[in-house]
Image (tube, rainbow, N blue to C red):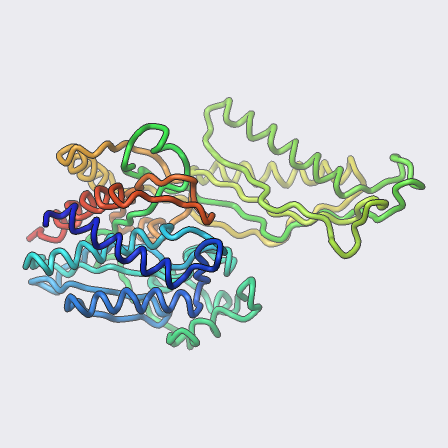
Length: 420
């Protein structure tokens, strides 16, 4: 059985098992630091144990599966991704990268290949920030980048702290901690991930070599405060209508986004939530409150800062126009990250040698790879095409595409792992 056939059979079996473990009736739900995420980690451990791989966890319950190398003092080759999902998500976002890395190590064991240096698959915790309003929790804990305050952040559905959830999942979150991962001890990190948009399908390419990962600005709990009033008894000039103010905010910022694009800038701007208060809003009342979220992404830090300043200006203008108050709330976000040029070139060359259609593109979504890149680790991402986008139950990854992309990752990791 050649490499591609091995990865096809391996992936098909594990994705099917993962589906059985996580299906919620519509999609996959594996919340960060949950029994479902634990079950996925246990599945990985069972497979790793069967192939004789080393298994260890850090204080935040991140999972490390290692094939020891000839010289264990040399910097390690790392790959992997996350196993948590958004609510009713798909079966491949995150998991594809972990399963791909594990398939590679298992194939190496089967073939008797002993790398020059340790090669490790990491399954990070809590990458999906829908559960905790923090970016890249697992990879950041591994580098000791979280604060004690961060550990008191509460999960969106349970209301309980990150500290409590880590402890429940077998971690030891007592403060302080030291870094598990150190940049100087890592040769590279390569993360395989499904593409979360339509570009690869549209370009008839199986694989993308990622050039960089966008950073973000996020206002997760923003709201506009107006005044509730009778819909028939309150003329327009006396209204402080939160819905009308919200519409103005959205349309003004959307027009600004179009202007920036016409000037050659690349970014996205999204109002992912926009809702009135179900307890007070009604058919015959002027809305006195609208809650919303705002997410901005770009690869350029200066552009993100510029957009943030403009958001503040527009908010003040909307307040004056509509006699309302715009509360943006706490700002969170992540830093953009550039991928390693030499890893990009090697991945493209391997793709050409294997006759696998590939292109270069930036990632609009955030990934653990950004943490590694911003710590100075040579980092790369590989996207594999999938239908129907991501963060929904309808993700569809062809196992043949997964096997092809994993074969490219296999070649790239082997190239780094066998360096003397």
